[in-house]
Length: 390
Length: 240
Image 1 (cartoon, rainbow over the protein chains, first blue to last red):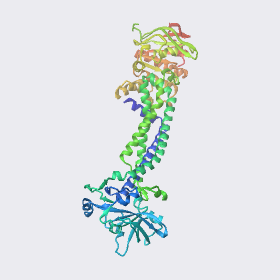
Image 2 (image 1 turned 135 degrees about the vertical axis):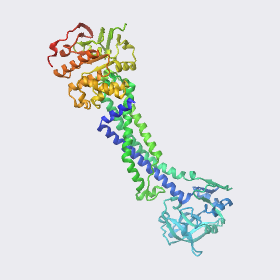
Image 3 (image 1 turned 45 degrees about the vertical axis):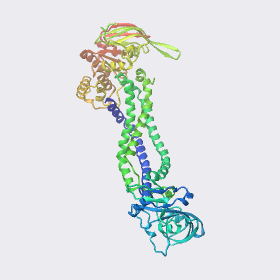
Image 4 (image 1 turned 30 degrees about the vertical axis):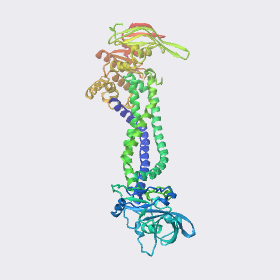
């Protein structure tokens, strides 16, 4: 127990030198947790928004359905099996039919995916209630990005063309009844939402769907021949990959911060060992072994990390708590980065993140503290007492 | 080698390499020291005083020959065993005091006891007793930077004697002190030698120190030139 006691005494006795290191290291702690919290928040928000808007508790895909292969859409539809139909009837699932089409806004050609969805569904946050219209109208719902790229606004009428189940092209004028503001790009860009039954009738795909979204919290996964269940792990992998890709950039900042903090510790250790040779000689004369000395100096360096964690907690906890409550207002251009997040980003600081960062910094601090102390192993007491390194 | 002496050296040789040259710091030194001696190694600079003191203190090892301290041969000891010997039985007093700057006077004196695993109450009692011996009990909470040279050396003496070692080695203990402080220090050490029966060995060329010695060993070019009893000189104490 003597080594920790002495190490603490020594670094507290070093005064300003210690506190400068501790403050720099504490900045690294807080900034690392802050940036990682932003990415965790981004991840959580993007996942939550995607789940609410389109993913639900998972999806059954018609076996040929592949959202990344538009050419597969022609055959990616089938009659909804009874097991899923029962769930839809109980409002525990909702069907979506996807058909390839073309929109002609203001004379331009705009390839789109036409998606049919039940206007009465309440499982997803899509504002499908706007699609409830009389037989005399053909309502269509688009997202704000789609509206921007096509130049359409609420009330506009635009020609929509599609190919039905028999391969025959047909076209109708649809009315834009609502432009929805959504953070989820996968339900917005290049997509037109219309009532499911209308699409089924127009495309000649009675009772058919391309996918069935299961309600969040619905635990049952009935057998559906010809359909494949995709769980959230699968469906969210794109979102997670995107966030992971973006967070790689944050790693650079992470590494720079760690290096900066470690440089401060390494520098202090080297300087400390150089300046305190005589003290080492005295300690050896008093009966300290070299091993004990290495432990003492390593622990002194490592304790900078412990003190930094305490200091970081003192100002970091209030700061990060405030930040996670008030969020970070994103810049205008952020939307184009492809994240499904709102106007404000709310960081998430998980226990795992805090513990992992703290442990990582402490381990690195200890290693960096140990490296310069290896020269002590070669130190002769007589040289040390004369203020020389062996 | 018999262990009737506290320290016994036999044909002790210490050489250093300096580039292509070899310097002989000690040349076949044969000495014996008994318990409670108050002895000085005297001689000019480079005569081997500090080297001999370092080997006796197990801070260094001989190139050849033998040095037995408290029955243990320095040349055969591992660094760990040497550290244990210094820790338990040997006290050091240095020319530049070598106090640990971030510790208080109390903590500096307490330090050797911490290494010996004494309990807090024992440490406190022994530390205050040692500070009492050197007359600095009232400066227990001061930091070394707040002390004069004489006070610092007295703290160093308290640190060296606090564990009541069998042997106390002092390398030029008065070199950085004025005459008055030197005499004060030497009288303190003389008293401790008498009261605790600690063996004191000095490396010095200070006439003030020599005036207090009971045995004077003169070294020249690493060899013992003279080994004679010395009668403490009252004139040596007149500076006080």
